[in-house]
Length: 335
Image 1: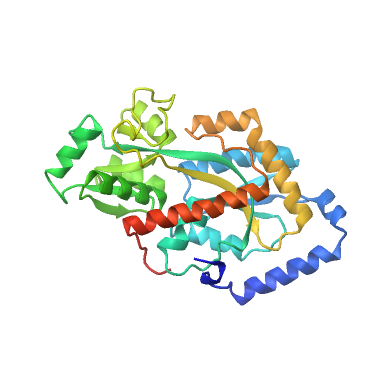
Image 2: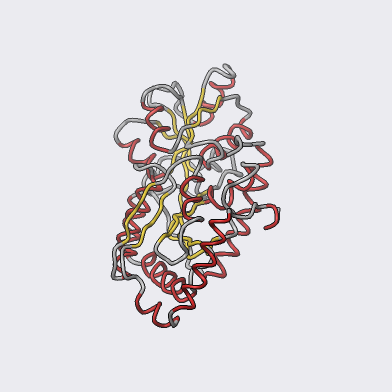
């Protein structure tokens, strides 16, 4: 898939880009960089409140605001596996005052699970990533299996009887579970929700039996006795649950997978503003308070990269997820 495969933005988007370019020329670049930000910056999180993406975004917004000597306000714009909020940012004024919390779903998965998107993933400027988000295989607490292999054998005996929650059609949580199902040879029914929080609520309520959950959330819920955790996706065991084996240890070596959280802005954002954001984002990501806040959520640190290196990383991620989506044959309804 090439840039030409993504639809051009609406006419309002093109007008916004033109106005942004004119605005960038109206003031000297140095003055724009020195003055930015002059008001609160909005960070759009395209997922519901209460999930790990939202919590990570709010924690990072505090540290980013400190680095920028300003205020970064989080706005949740959930819906359609990140499409609603991402489209809103794509159509916003490219002035640095509207940021997107971009994930693997918004920029590496949606292009392949949805036939057409109302936004073009390549019409964003990647700023930097600030965390990685590994996963865990979990069930409701009364599920009658204690180990991953026991779970597999139990479910195999009753194909189609059990189901699983996900954060939405085409979400990373669905894709990772479908990969696990394929590797284990299971028939488990998918029940999609609009975000992680309602998917977890369904698991608590007994409407669903299992799911793939962000590792940090899984650790906290396990401690309170609300779920069982069977295996985690990192290459090594996680310090928050040292007794829980990795997927590789359980015989599923192809499931070493993690999502990533990053900041992006619409194409056309003035270069001095982009540089200011990149500097502040990098500093915030390296700050000890940020690292501690992310660790509490079970998130890992993202390797330090230049903007060019991060853009190259996203290109590789698109190819990796494309191959995965095609292998598990996931296709979401038209948006």
